[in-house]
Length: 167
Image (cartoon, rainbow, N blue to C red; front, side, top):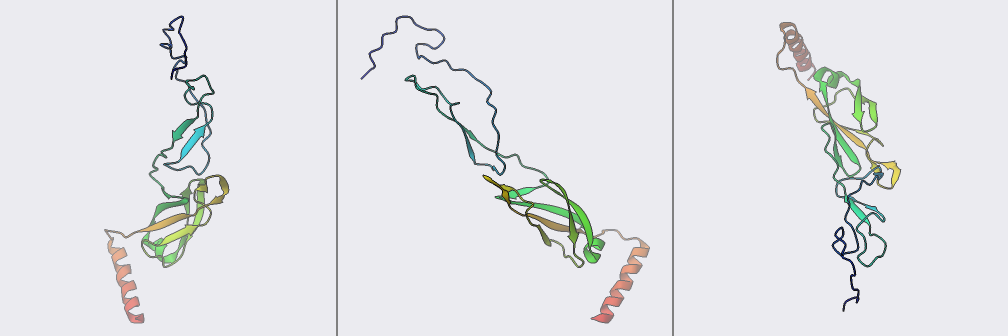
């Protein structure tokens, strides 16, 4: 059944539909903790109702841009830190980039390659609860020298002989 409406005057703008299609910019605030696949709703900014009712809602599907320094899995953030072998052996303090800026982290002496250090509370915030945050995990990438000077080689040989005496 139709609505029984007779169009007296044809409107070239809307082709008799009663609504005009226009593009407009909408400003919205993306909440902290949003990740790829989340859907944001903007009330009243969608298509017009064909029967003259209020407009519908606009849905925005989120795709978070990848970052070259960080990997994200839910609320957890992962990154790598290249450290010279000597700092892995002796221990050292480093500044590490996080999503909030730089944070100091202590590399314990005797750290092995691929050791993972946790920085509690420096991950992504939980969507809807910015006080609840994940962790930031730093994987140590220990750099071993490829070319040693004559003096460095002598020192390593000396260390090697000391180590075999204690084993």
